[in-house]
Length: 632
Image (cartoon, rainbow, N blue to C red):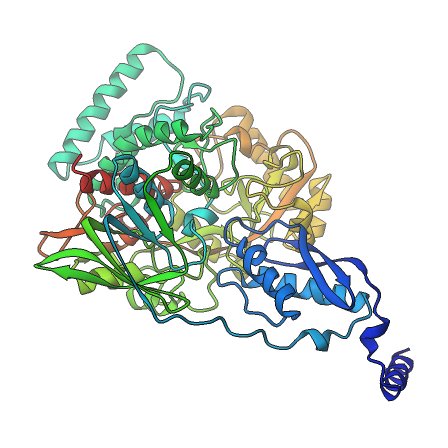
């Protein structure tokens, strides 16, 4: 058949007829695998040309992959080629769309080579734009957007620059979980194991005046709780602070920790006023340590916070200008004060952004900077190389830390880098989960080996110690957080997850074990023991203090087993700040005009970040920074 095709093409050419002349106009559909699953693309061919390209279905991450629709696809049509630049941060999505278009071209009878010429390079500009505003924000993730809304509501004129072509940062690819004490915990019964945890915290030796103050407050709260006769979960912002501090080996700045835990509930209420619908049920996510984790019902993952802020800015017509694809190159310093930012757009346009009230660095951490993380790493033996996947966007390269250092900022706790215990073995992403990542873990031998409600660093080390550094998260399909459209908690289609070959589904545990390559006899015995613990509430073989509803496996199949491995997730160290989000130098003095919030900062988490404290950290300190700049 191939020889005949070649001969036919040669005959057509000898007659002066291009093979594309026999192409069939029409509508063609093809699929290719992207980052989160299959991307279905529709291509309309007219007069042997690409008339239109449209994505019909995908599970790619919003807003990260959205530029493939707004920029990459229009260029394919405009230049009649699939040889266009990939979208930074959405490389796999870009390749998938181009691959699907090529499939459609072939099906239409067109020669793909005729659609592979390089697209023209974008025109470069040589202009400088000067903006005089009140507040300049560098970074458009959760911290930056929280600050932009707060400053805008205070009547401040704001410019936000973001080096990616979209706003959202790592907040947009996070799980979006949000720790808050004393909210939606009414239906959670306090277990004996949890009581022992509280008693253990209260018995600890006092280390500083604030520690003593928090202990005294919790002791009083605890006595009042016991006297009330309640069997519901005990919690408070002070307990949240003590658990957070202890989880980071008491290396964090306790004042920053307490500032966070005192302000998460007001932040939650403010988000509700902007349109976030909280689901009314607290849970305990992986590494969260206590059932105080909240999630929303009107969005999936952390992208919901991003959309909420953007929609609010638009609806309220706040004086906030957002400039994307623009990297901050330097800080403007006048008379010892940070007075603005120098930035450059990818098209060559330069910006001089003068800030009357201050500059906020909200650029995130350095998890995607392999050189930087191995330079500072103190926890993982300098082995966080290229082969170690990351949950982060490729843009998380520590830019804000570099800018702050040039302005004389002090750095703190840079050596403490967190691995997320349960990431995709190939990409590092957390979006492939089925069920909670705090469900039971088993190795290939079908046995549990760790208390899955432990600290994230404890879990990561235990998971890496398993054969091949991989393990399985076992969940029930009934508890897998799959919606009516067949998508998981991140919006990824379960069908695509199963087709990836890294997750398995079966009606029985024996069948599940066979599909996944797990010791079936041991898996059945392991789940039986787990179900007994969930029924009795005590006696877990790994020492878990409680079995939350979403972790139960006693309702029968189908079951899921998802292959996971730890991936670089969060850099706890960064720029020194105080409780007003002002940046400090090494001597502890405020650098006038400079603020920082979110993962670019250090001191909030210590050696280990509590799961679901990151989004609150970013949003709360972004809000605080803007209030400080606004003089409130």
